[in-house]
Amino acid sequence: MKTILLIPALALLFASCSKSDTTSDPVADLTTKANMVVQSNWSVTHYTDSGKDETFDFADYKFKFNTDGTLVAVSSTATFNGTWTLAQGNTTPDDSGNNSADDKLNKFTINITGNKQMDNLSHKWLTDKITASEIWLRDDNVTSNEILRFGK
Image 1: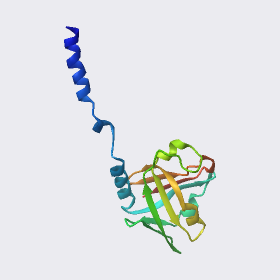
Image 2: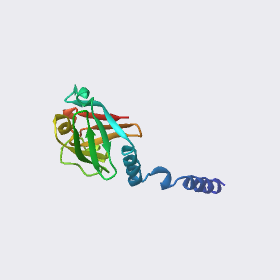
Image 3: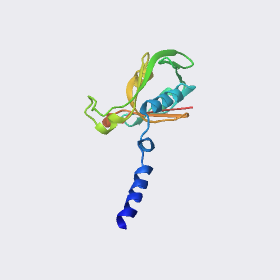
Image 4: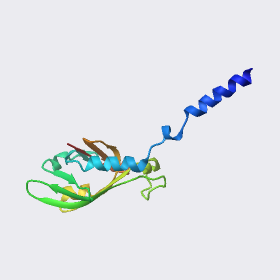
């Protein structure tokens, strides 16, 4: 009798589990995040370098991330052009020798030069959060204590 009851219970347990319930498509997720990035202009809402808050250095800038991978930073006195990419993280360690758990995070790379502010942004960042209204990035080197956040 116990065996007869155990078989339906196990069948119900296995039927309720499926791979589609527990896994997501990382490529689709990455595409969704990239689409959020290109929706409008962004401002730097927080920038910390070596633990020092330098957000005020970016007060006059607006950033536009374009679908073709180009980036435009505009202030009242200058315009700077660069590129950006958002790439999927992986499970193999990077060459930084830092926290290997961070390697799984998506990488947001900014390449832009022209002045000190743009040079500071030109970096391969780890993505902590990307939503329609916020982009939270950080350096994978924890000793640099470098954080970059964009907002709308």
